[in-house]
Length: 199
Image (cartoon, rainbow, N blue to C red; front, top):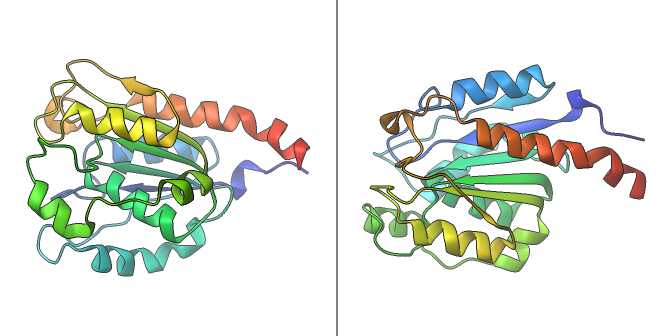
């Protein structure tokens, strides 16, 4: 039995100082909904009240979005949060990380990112809880250095998708759409029928 598109859920996580309607999130939400996904973009407390505990509490209202057919997408601190979600919940079908900090300096907000959750990760559990993974980063990110994307991709066992001269891959850098992320999710989806047949 194959997974119907309407059974698919997606969560998009913003970063520090971000909003649920910022950057390319509304565009991606609309595109995924056209593909039959049920999509949510939670608003987390930030920067005031920003902590792993407060973000996990905010995520409680979206627990039904985290299931084996789901895709998680995290930008910046939202990517770090995605790693923490995968350590605690799962499995999910796929996870996408955009400009995510994992502790490799320079990181502009290193202290606040470290205070959010620290930078020690259970990589074995994370990879076990996300069947498919994709990592995006640029060389001139003013907030999170490229080495973070390179090491994250290595830990996740995937190739880094490098987007040159794209800054933090946010609206500030001119990105209110981010087609490579949608393309990655489409690649995940293309594998679903084959994987369902193997079950």
